[in-house]
Length: 172
Image (cartoon, rainbow, N blue to C red; front, side):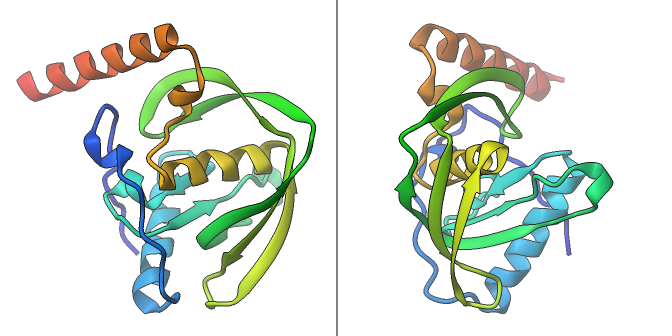
């Protein structure tokens, strides 16, 4: 396993739509494992392949409480097949937009279908923070960031700050 650099917004690679995985082979499993290691090292609860510069439709999440130990979920080609009629607002952050947070409204619960690390088609019901996290990571697969769900004013303010930080980092 290896740590991967996380792409920081604004970056055009975060706006690319991913390509489906034909099957979960050793290459995809290695990507999933590296993404989990990277996510844990960054204290995240989810990570999508575009955030590490990969164009495959892969996400990893782990919303387990620290006391419970790790409970990683590896998904290829996730797609939502049902959503609840109830919405919920959660404060979201993103490893690609460090230290920036905003409330985002999403369906409270979802049912999704995906390929697991053994290339098996699974269905899952998720609610609460797990549903929010999965939807957030699935957005990345479509080139959507959580700031795309908030007002243009807030979004532009966050992206300007990140651009300034990136510019300062390259000048140092």
